[in-house]
Structures are given as structure tokens and as C-alpha cells.
Length: 169
Image 1: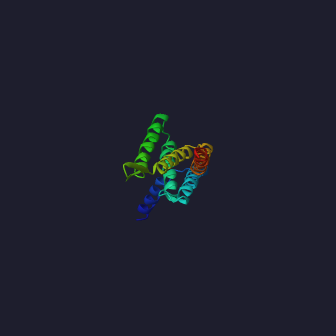
Image 2 (image 1 turned 45 degrees about the vertical axis):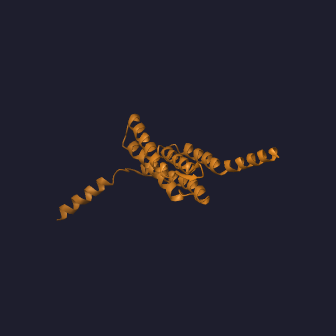
Image 3 (image 1 turned 90 degrees about the horizontal axis):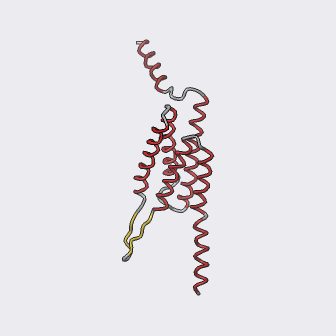
């Protein structure tokens, strides 16, 4: 019976040996945490504005996208295989984004809601892919740009709309 438990222990060690050293553990941790934090930042902005996809959704999308590219990269996948993985992530996130878009009938015109949320989730997935591939600086810069679009641009648009109304009078 002792030999049996020893075999189980050795098998368990082999199954959890995908992170072989401290350097690799640090790399995986930094990439996944970077994706989680950056996704959380965008999610916080959306949740703060009362949108359906908030912090948890954005964090999970970013971590998932990072993990989808991190694991094949750690396994030594070639560039063509990584290209297919990234294409799969993009296609998959498209289905999630499609679920956030609603079309309401208001009068004779249809009113579409959720496009910005869908685009934000799409951007969050791209940021996650970037972090997962070890392009953390690019992921941070992209997050800052997306945050600017989501939080600053509505104010800019209001200023221009207000100025346009002043000139009409």
C-alpha cells in the first residue's frame, strides 16, 4: 500500500510541474495579475457608470484571454499556432460581446444599446492577450488609452454638442 501512495504522490507532482522554477512562476503571476488589474480598471469605470459588464466581467475576460495565450506559449507553440489561438480568442469574445448588444424599438427607429460595452470587452480581451504574451507595457498603455476614451471622450463630446447648440441660436 505504501508503494501505491508513493506512486500517487509522484504522479501528482508531475501533474503540477508545469511551472518549473521561480522565474517561470514569477512570469506567469505577473502576466495574469497584470491582466486582472488592467481588466479591473476598465471594469471599474464601466461599473461606476452603471453598465452591465463591470469589474468581475472585465477581469475574467482579461485573465481568460491572457491564459489562452500564456499556456500555449509556455508549451513552446510556434507563431502559426499562436496566431490560431489569438484568432480563437477574438472569435470567442465576439460571441460574448454580441450578448451585450440590445436593440430596442423606440417609435419608428431602432435604438441600439451596449455597443460601447461590447467594444470595451473586446478591448479588454486584447489587453489580456497582450499581457499574456508578455507585452505588459503595451497592455498598460492600451488600458490608459481605453480609459481615456471611456471617461474623457464623453465630456469632450458634451462640450462640442453644447457649443453647437450655442451657435444655432
